Image (cartoon, rainbow, N blue to C red; front, side, top):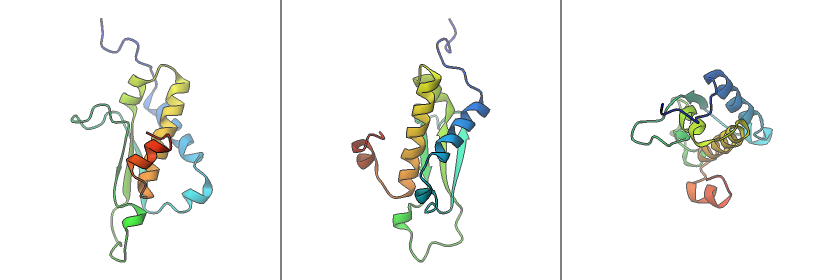
Length: 122
């Protein structure tokens, strides 16, 4: 039996659209505050963390000081493969993608995992 039996199918383009829609649902008052950050979709996370749904890499807004200039954008990556493997329906993918996007944007704002879990964005 193939390993992908039961795995939800969704093209990369469809998944990228869900990520874009999740970004569009972020309140404008927050998106206006986002600074020097880019969002990407990748198929798979690093091999050492195969169940990772999203990753924030950069310097949170709360840690930026006068030294912060001329740096590459922070990077938020949402991983398609593990999201599809953990979800049972398109509605699950939509919900999980939104949670992942909010979770990683929260890291951009300096909110840590413990606080995100307490708020339901584990």
